[in-house]
Length: 542
Image (cartoon, rainbow, N blue to C red):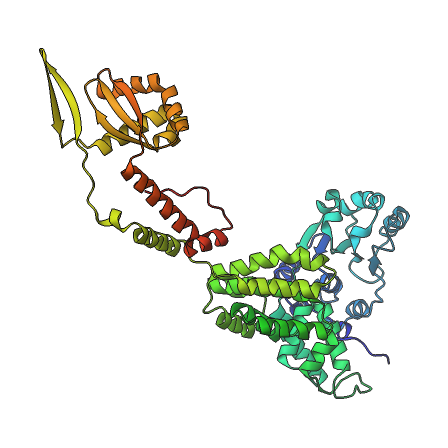
């Protein structure tokens, strides 16, 4: 007798044996128990997740001699024929090779006949999305109102290709990818039954490579068992043990330990270690693009683990590996991991289309190792405030200056000049500046270079510390500014503009230039520009 592969040898025969699809099997069991099984059911989902297997078990449950039963007996004639694929009343049709309208017409003609010895005449159409549009149209009326003795079970990996007119006539069940831990646990049981010893980490690696597909996982396990130290007996049962290093060589994949090693080297900025790991991966003939994708996934998983919420749900890895990732991410900030992931995504097209992916990947990993961990925004603001205090200590400790404002009061024929120290010229100038800028926004820049020095009964004196252009800008709006002064001081006041840069003003300008230059060259400012990928627009001395 020829060898039967594990995917066929241990194919589930009852709903309880289906792995990772409890949401579907529970619904079907309840439907059978309540007698509410739909006449047309569509099973959709990724490859190798159990669509056709569930359809076969459902067919056995509906035609079982003791049924319809939620658990078929697998002993009666109908159950045995369906299991062996020779049932006269259950037809498994390949949609890819029977997709013409003529074949669908033959099917419509045959459904009129009653089943030979079963309760229902059941049609299981696999990859139903491969049917032509004309074939689907020919099925419409038949699917909507089939004879009472006919059931349709469809399976597809691409439900989006099925016309909505067909979908609306079917009860749909979506199967999901099977978790790595569930696949690995199932394979542990199969290895015990096959009398073969496979390391747990090897089974986890096989489960990861299967990408949620049980059939792929069992095919890889078959391949691994064939290379075991034991020999396969005539009964089809294997014996012996499998070495983890052999599994890595057989599958041609990168060990998870390598992913952890290169991530640790990037985090600790060990460039020599990075180059060593990449050289080993390249020397073993591994696909660097696949390795790069695994690295992206690992950094993403570290970010999820760092959040500490719903880790087991969002990270599809065994519990043992989650513990290792928790330990690796313990002393790293989530923001720093996001920086690394951002570089990985930006450089992905370079790796994918590079003629020399090894060098491209080395450059990317070195770039990740050279980035500086970003500071939290609160800490950055605190450091900037500290820097501001250090660069302007006089302003921090000196009391606010009080400027004496003078004005002239007319009393009959005498003119008496008075002064008052209680008039806050800074507050006055601030309020006046806000009114002018609100009405004339274009004067905001020139007014920032003006000093409000004196106001008399008839005039207000402005000293312009800027250039001649600033003087012209203000002089052009002189009449409008005088109207604002009149409204502000409640009397007619002329505007006098003086362009004067004295020694004190020059010192102030020089001090401001010096502070701006220090701020521009400060390491903290440079780090902020690099971290936020920004540019310096303006520096204001407050």
